[in-house]
Length: 134
Image (cartoon, rainbow, N blue to C red; front, side, top):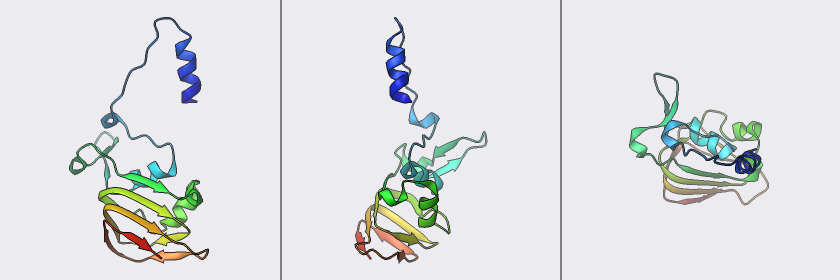
């Protein structure tokens, strides 16, 4: 839709676009964005806006989920007890079929990989700048 709108706007003489800073809204285009938004990296303001917590300094965590989690139902199966903590996470990458238990905390740059075809569980704990292979 955005591409079509961009093409349409270009058809009108004098039309332009306005850049809206990320601080004004929290876009959700994929389950990657949704997982970040569900985490503790964001908070709801008194006027009901979702914004990054001040400690994030305006930089959202980068989340890259395996295509297994492309749809919301599958992403929710990854986090049945709620989203992991991403307040101190710079980047999270998830590959393979797995479930995160309650109490999972990611800090820094973390990659979680399940190389097998069977479902694996990542237990409660803090994972810091690491690649976890299950």
